[in-house]
Length: 279
Image (cartoon, rainbow, N blue to C red; front, side, top):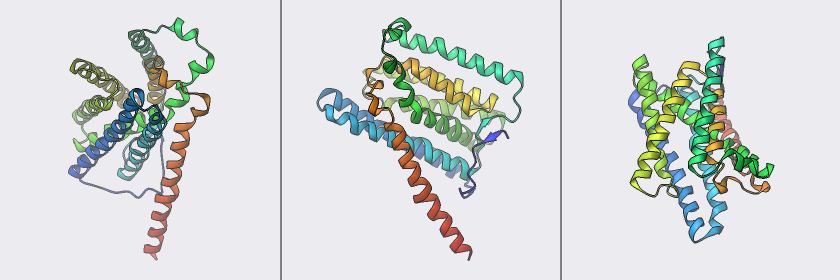
């Protein structure tokens, strides 16, 4: 099954398809709400209350960590969904396909950067710290994108739809649509119906591409890295993705803090209760 993400401390459950579908929808709604709340704070901060920017960042990283990382991870392990970093066999086709996937992300990213009025020459003229700033800022988001969309949603809908090849194709499309429509939470960026439609269309196509790659390659790690590269180009022109140096680890600190709560506040008491019940 490849290099799998494993945690034997998560209790295995076997919900029916209806319950799984409801859970997937609720997770999507939680993710949407978390993004809407943080983007709402960003919107207000940019117009009337600059002091709300940092609380918005904390709300964003907390929401991403909870709804995009730890809940999807827990459900993937509990439901026994197939999430692997690398396939067990890695023939030449895997490496060629992965390199091609990465190469395709670069011109797409450069095009998105150009649409925002920035060129690679403009980037090269910036200080090194400015160029590097989005890289650590993106870590929690890229982990969340990988686990939520190409772990939980892709494999979860695949099981709900029956596990056939047609179910896999349907899961790719459904997960991509959910990925596209979640961008309606970007209240600080969507200014018209046309802008909303364009954003949904483009991000849905991106979701289909990534979903298809994960199904064919069975590699979440490569999808994570390619998404990271693509989003660096897309968001480098946005000044808010270049915070001061002290703020670079903010997302990681929030992620680690919630991870400790998950590990010692949720899993450890659960295991202790199971041992007590067994006695």
